[in-house]
Image 1 (cartoon, rainbow, N blue to C red):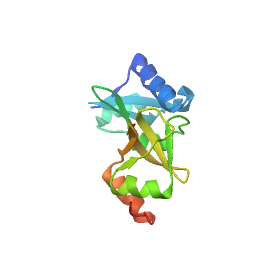
Image 2: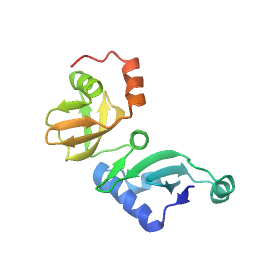
Image 3: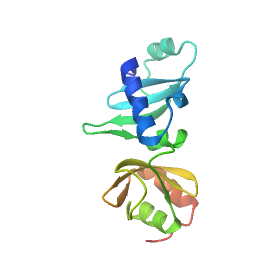
Length: 157
């Protein structure tokens, strides 16, 4: 069952998005954060939200925002697609896109800090990547990248 994230946890989660991705805390105004297991969800706030969630015993609501890991927090592709990041964003060219979607790894130096990054192509957010030691690994769920590949002509690496 979903539970509301405490004020302290909310502040820590939003600080992570501010520091890592340059997404200001204000971008989450009007959203409540919920937790189930290791997943944090963002749901639009509204009158009676607390009662509605309790009455219906909701298992999932809104957009999955982040997964809590033992070593670090992993932002979700869905969450990164909704909020505009300005830091640790990697823009792929057509050649790199092919490698990213076909193999899931691109070996290249990018202007980003090691860790989770926002991956874009032609200005559109594709989702989450993991960048370390000159390697960018796709963290995009298979069903999402299959949709992307189906809509564009992805060059073979």
